[in-house]
Image 1 (cartoon, protein in one colour):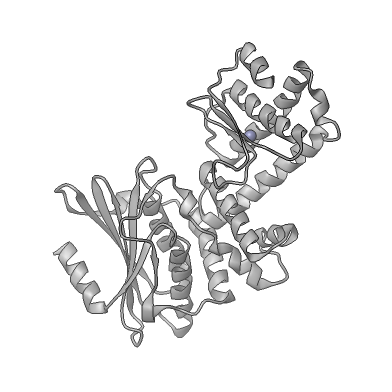
Image 2 (cartoon, rainbow, N blue to C red):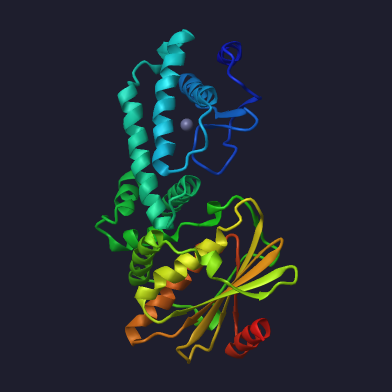
Length: 345
Ligand SMILES: [Zn+2]
């Protein structure tokens, strides 16, 4: 009935689906597709809640707002949409579905989510609203899998849980959702073999601090790549050193810039680490391929002091957050040198 009224009111609509399970992994009650006008709504046990979700999506469809450019624009739009959903309910004589749910409470929920998406974006070292939503969703999945309640999740987001293990563990959410499409031709996951570092609260704390700084870095890593070969597919390369914690943000920022580049294409990514457990110098290689080019990020890891070894544990911890969509391989140092030589020779 609401659907017919919306159509009659001239709101451009595609098809409607009321689902028993969500259409995406994200923890949302529904969605409106900007290009097709299709709407799906997750069915609730409470029929009034199902209608509220539908009205919210219809309000999005009516507003036709452009894609948000910032996290605040995203949540300003959610607040305005919630206002509009109430107006439409009144106009279409279903105002009663909001009984007991004052607008102020819905808006307070939206403000909580706005704040949490900013915090999730810090942890994901991004300001992109789509990526902030994906990061927050992955953080909720992590909280669920660890059995964290609402209060623990909230505290961990603010780095304020009384248990530092929790504050450190929140960095481990999967980054797979930060881009829409991956290719996984070389398989996914793997291990660092004998180079695998022990993970503890310190590595989590180090990674958390570095991610925060990486998000504030403003470096155009793509333009810093060296062109190694212009034959199709083009080959490019970026070399960085990592000898102490202060250099970790740049490495994370560069790796993430490559992993999230060309957002409209499918991307194939593999991590390789080269070295012997008995030596302290290790090399990490991130290989990224899209249709027309392959980029290799080389990180020469050479800890300055014994305490700088924590940096490698933090780097590995970051790599593991991409393991759902990228492969991780361990090879000998000689193999690494040969590969580096062959690529640049
Ligand atoms: Zn919405």
